[in-house]
Image (cartoon, rainbow, N blue to C red):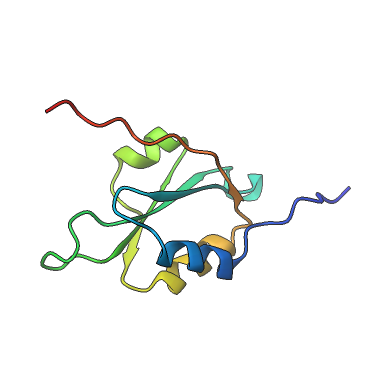
Length: 103
């Protein structure tokens, strides 16, 4: 039986990426075909530093894992990253903001 849940589309991902503010991220879960990985799209806090790209794409087994490892990909082009995610039939994940380290 086929699932009736529609994946998040490339255009929706792209539009939301264009509206991201500092500290915000988009979090998805991929289908079991892609190991049910968690994908995070976020603004690069180091941008516009030297050799830094505007967007980061992180992939991990859990959201916490994805946030702690090196980005899987980065780009100044939101459409490129949105397409990569959309090709993997993502679903939205309700996310809690990452914990801020004490000063």
